[in-house]
Image 1 (tube, rainbow, N blue to C red):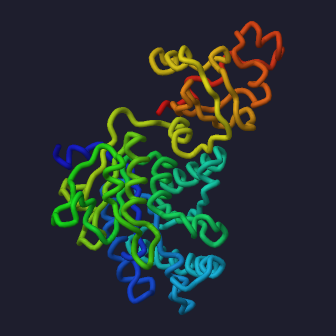
Image 2: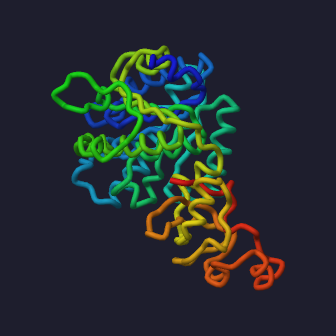
Image 3: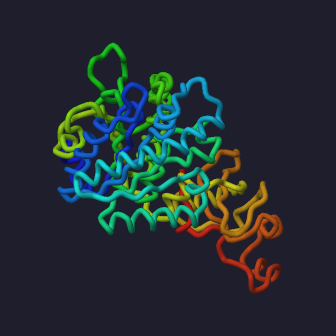
Length: 369
């Protein structure tokens, strides 16, 4: 399908910028950032809405402190991030100001994404910034979160940001031209519609000295985007005018295309952000009711309860063979469900009194894999 047609309905774009694109000789480069900002400003003037996810805080701090990132401990990287965030945002603000735009900084942690209230607060903040004409610039809060520094990557973060702001397109800008099925082939794959083990096996290792993300993390981000029903492009950020050219329909990079309807609102959070606090095993009749008849989950179909969770928590649903088939937000605590599993609605009313719900999980709070 023509690239222009695939992108025809795109309005809101998340642009993830890798560390290698904005560093030069181990330091943050104003020249490189300005080149990318001018490209994004061109999109903004054409009516697109842009959210930036930028790597580079640790690299900026290492440059300022004259430290070698490869030799630093995690606390030292945290300290470098604290120094680097200021430098990085100052550069972005100066560059966007030259183009007539203001920015707003958003620092996120994994918990901000997985906690429903903070997820919504992040969405409201970024939506309001966009409405006010400012560009949200997002990064992980590396100065306080150990896990993100040691294992995290901004490819995955950018996929979650795409879901937070319900963007139509994620563009990952890196120093590669796209996804190569065979490194001996000089041309990247144009379109991908599904992420499978074969693709991941071909993805290779980690990223550059300045970043933590390699092709594997990009494919994981693509998997989230595809399952959300949206689109993602991996492209070379060193290509002149890459963003404007992509949105004009040039076949730059590899596009990952979600099929079917986009997941909206709460279901997107349930699918990719909500941390499952427990498991419910359900019988074959309940599986059919959920998958074929599009019904809610009732207590009569629950055969097993595992884990400790509260009303409003997410749980995974397992079929009688123990295979996960979905995830949803429960209306009961684990203690209550242990008592009422397998019971009919009339029995639950007698057991719990006025506090009962007809559904264990309402259809609107449920996603199926």
